[in-house]
Image (cartoon, rainbow, N blue to C red; front, side):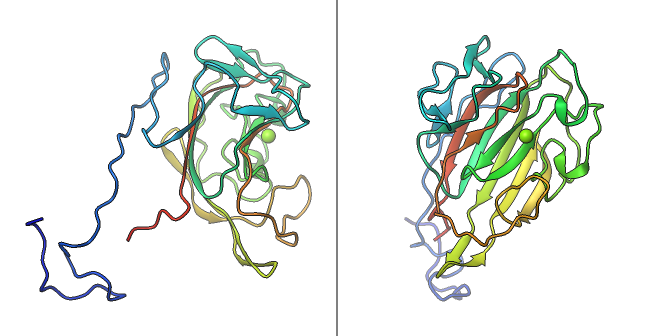
Length: 248
Ligand code: MG
């Protein structure tokens, strides 16, 4: 390599010089493409595809057995009321997660009863999915909320029947000898708008109760999608694991 220098000051830490010619360069990733309302985009080429519309093979019911949700038009799947939450067979730790969801156009309720679902990181930490387009509810239950803890910074909801995106960066909590060392954090873009910025979370999600980290859990867990009884649709779900992905 001809570019770079070997006579510049060392950066803090002393491992690499400024513009160091020997510093490893990052891997090349082909970044895929964005979705439109009409068609789903493609994931980065190093992503694990969790759902691309062809089947539910990556998913099972949290109750055990096959996932009871159904494939629908538009490379999508839809919650089937009463079949229960679904989870990925694989488990993941710190990650970048992309998913797209669409609230039902048939409106029969308000507040938490309209297009309710959710996505759980590690199967424990819920980001709320809800139709909050001209549908008020309590702040920490809005779409994009870290449910029961932190409202989203903005309400970036699109109308029901329109595809919406969540891009999540999640960091698992760290425990040391069973005690919390670092809490879980969440960064969320809702439809491209920052809704959480490395928000420290208070513990695994609870309903009408304080979250805490009293019970240590493992560094990995499944991605879970919630059956809250509403026919919410999903498409184009992919994940990139971030463990050990720190710049050299
Ligand atoms: Mg929910």
